[in-house]
Image 1 (cartoon, rainbow, N blue to C red):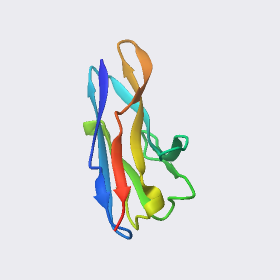
Image 2: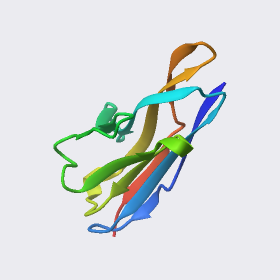
Image 3: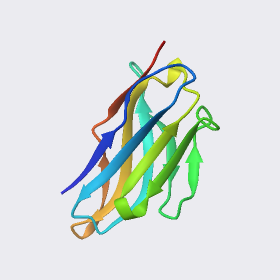
Image 4: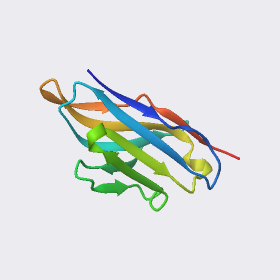
Amino acid sequence: QVQLVESGGGLGQPGGSLRLSCAAAGSIVSVSNMAWHRQAPGKQRELVATISRGGSTNAADYVKGRFTISRDNAKNTVYLQMNSLKPEDTAVYYCYADVYSGGRWRVCWGQGTQVTVSS
């Protein structure tokens, strides 16, 4: 069984910073693509940023230049550094990973961590 455990959410001020972490745990052989998504109240879940195992990244236009995704393959962990926070970044943030475990690739999601941006 594979679990993605997120941490680092909370209250941030406009213009401030927060850093999210997500660690994959369990019987893991390999982790391929990892990503962060978010879902604001009353809205659909949307993609924030992705990162390949080799470190290639993509970010949504609404976070480019402010958010940075990174990973530590040795720790099976993905990070999201969020700078210049805006109130519209308020959402539940979910990490995602393609994990090889138990003889097959699995799509795994974290439980979500709340990020609230407010003064």
